[in-house]
Amino acid sequence: MYEKTKQYIFSEIGKRVMNKKKEKKLTYYQLAGYKDKEDYRGSLKGQEEESEVDKQFRYNKFDYSLITNIAGGRAYPKKNPNLVPDLYIEHLSEKLGFYSGKELLWGDLEKDSSLQLNIFRNLFNDILLGTDEDMKETYNSQLLDYVPYSEYYTYWQMFETGEIDMPKFPNSNYTVPGYFYQIKPDTTVGQYTIQKANAINYTWYKFDTMLFKLINNFLENDFKVKSQNVNNNSSSNVLYTLKKLNKKLDDLAQRIQIFFQENALNENSLGLRVRNIIVSDYKKMGNLIVNDMNSIEAGLSELGMKYLVESSLAYITALKRVQFIELEGYEFDK
Image (spheres, rainbow, N blue to C red):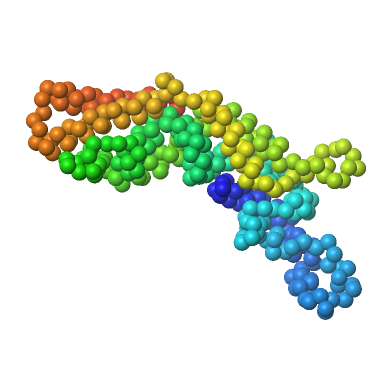
């Protein structure tokens, strides 16, 4: 679950650890509590060879390999790759000079707002690749407001997945493919992927203030735990944990789902207009194509249908222009 999101989170944690390590000119051995490589190697000898001094000296040491894995973006590559133990969050925060465990996990949320957007992007993709069909439907429905995605997603359903029933070849169960409609399969596949990414960015663009607050509140509050050290009531008694990360991300996904349901698309959506036109008129076009295959002569009704389809295609192009103007030059790849 949420593999892209977790991979991003741990990759960013690793980058922060690496940057602070270089800044403070520390080695991984020093971060683990050893003097140097030889000191670390000496700690690996068998228990039967250790003196009492050795045992005492090893006390309060940290796992060297785990620290290097954390810096590499994966805490436990095989057993549990998506968990940085609480003790290590606290230890590395102090050793590397982070203000708190929160800064180690998320960076400076006040100075850098890119984390919220990237978590949104990765979470969105995880949902679309997931198995919760209800949540996928809610998330994907928001993307349909973006005209280019609505167009190519509809083509995708018509000619690639068959989710939208289209006219079939005469005396056959095979759907007439897209190239009969002058729609190239390679273009559909390529543009579907590109426009999906753009549509996710467009969704953030529409709701950026509200989505930013929602995700920022999640990062600020959902990972806090109380320290068992209760010497005072200061903020230093607040620690941070990545335990139950899947559940936390599931909670965030549900909050965003509720937000999308509260802001569902309506008749004003340009993307929904495009989708409805394509579904309706391309079925009409398909019927014309099948009639031609059957050598059925086009009558006045068929000619009117052909003109309607041509007019609809021009209208779709016009709606793209309208949305482009509304976006005021917003760049999706920034």
